[in-house]
Image 1 (tube, each protein chain N blue to C red):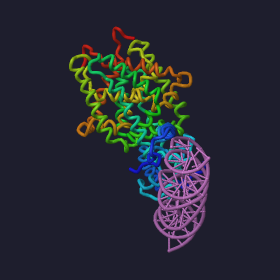
Image 2: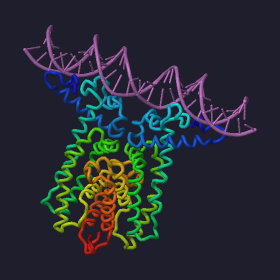
Image 3: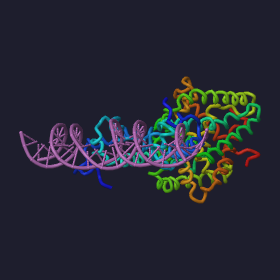
Image 4: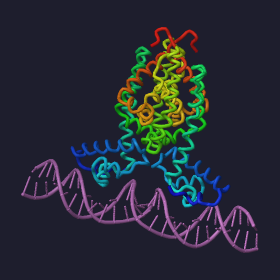
Length: 216
Length: 216
DNA sequence: TGATAATTTGACCGGTTGGTAAAACATTAC
DNA sequence: GTAATGTTTTACCAACCGGTCAAATTATCA
């Protein structure tokens, strides 16, 4: 892994800090909507308002930009799941997990789409992360959910598929935004749709996991 | 819109039928995993086992192949929703809708990913379809769901977000397949995961929509 | 201020891309 | 069989792609 020239300077400068930030911001824009292969360096350069060789002075390759983004985003993307607390009450934990994930879909849709693109295209750059850190975290939280079910606090259910369901329903509002807005129509496409979604999903998951008489 | 040379022949031949099918099959493969811009004609040609100019004899441009695929798939993709029957019992209608959507995710994952890619990238080729036919169909079915709620057959809920939830949870198993398998691990990544998902989702939606005493 | 280090640019390169033209080849109808 | 029709290939093109290089420019600091 050869370093870009900017990283070979004697000290890290203010300009490096700023430009790298600027580039990653632009790259996020483009990668999120076109995927890795559909993105060109020229496009990123244009969005960032700088020339291509200048961009390559800070990141040696397109891969390097993509990796920097993935690394930065992957971590923060899993934060809501990490906060999932075994000691809390199941209903409020699940409720606030949904809420946090929905907030991320609303506030960081590009980050969500960056991942969605990557996964859709077979996760060629993050397979290890999926099978390593991500799997471990999910395994851990699945165990928490299972213990809740065993203790009779929520209905018995497959904890993995519960997590998948929360992921997919919430991220849907970032990844499939165009479709959601198209179907809801102009009038209902304001920010209110996130409130409506939150209300619906909380109802669905909370009462969907409640224990009932005939409950299997 | 200029026609490809194959369409300019006097009659439609057997070879045309076969080759166009072959090409669309290959194109589905590639578009589904790389998106429109990430796909090259050469790639499609290689998968189809024919030369690029030969391919362009049947479809004049990359756009033409993509559009042919979208048109073909969009229709069949909405079939499960069309079958949604106002006269049926809500629980069994929702249950079988989930089941059908999951079967499609299992049996036609490429078709699902083709759409996912398209939507993710801003639906540049199907915006009209989203706001037209798709919206109309959803509006119609949302009205059905609303009437069920009004009649006290299911809990009150936002019918649009209910439909989004069913879409996202089921399509997740096609679109995010790599992630699902990564998280579940080798052992649990057999076809059984679709059975598990079906069981979980039916439980979630059915009891999530049941009317209860404290019901909202 | 001037020297040094850091940044930016323009010109360029080999490979790939979407697509074309025309000739060679295969199939079909008579 | 042969002529017309339909199909495939070879050779090609201009634009674009990821990336390099060296020179020009700008910022930093003694």
